[in-house]
Image (cartoon, rainbow, N blue to C red; front, side, top):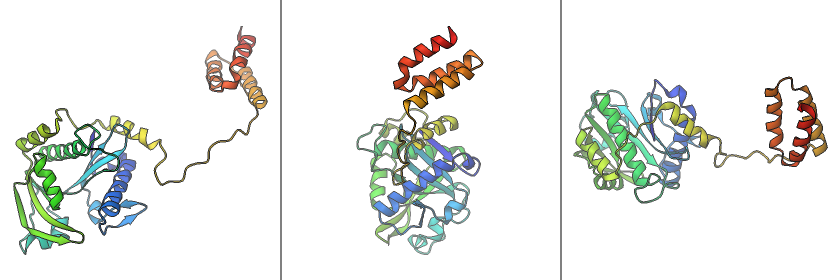
Length: 282
């Protein structure tokens, strides 16, 4: 499932954005070896401060497994301010109807092959579909993306081949970078959907998305220290005395039921539960 996080709703998705930036750190620094800025295990750059739109994919476990950043070309963007050498001296594209797509990545450590919902191919297509459909609704006609030859082949195989390129491919650190143009057309979206077998609406309701994400947030984050396991510091006798006291203080049947439910969770007191409840309320 996909959510678009922008300047209007980012206050609701702070935790999701943090996980997105952690995914970017794992992909761009750890896997690809890019020279990127990492802080608190999160990858961020100055373009993240320009209120871009983030396309974020969540899997069935509530984990962030894919993302892409969309930024208007009317102001600073990566092709004009970082990868300008690709353009061979030509002026960068600047139009309210052209957006730049960057920082695309998927969690290859968690995702698998094939075209199932937990596959690299599926999440890649899902993010692409969402980006193009969202851009369409915003009146965007084209997207420009700085990609490498590997991603170029992925796009071609998935029915999402660029229709043109800007400038020429240039070595950038450990990769070769090229600027690709893709139209935000119904035909392109249909091709990606046909390739991936995705016919449903990829966008999720905000509340549903946050509920799914909370399932993952409840888990211990990888790499973070775990809390020590709780130890048995209260004897059974003390626990029995506590429940007797609480049951005696219960003024209503609802309060008594609340105590009874808590007692049910303590397996050693199951027999005690039946006898004490009968004494108190029968």
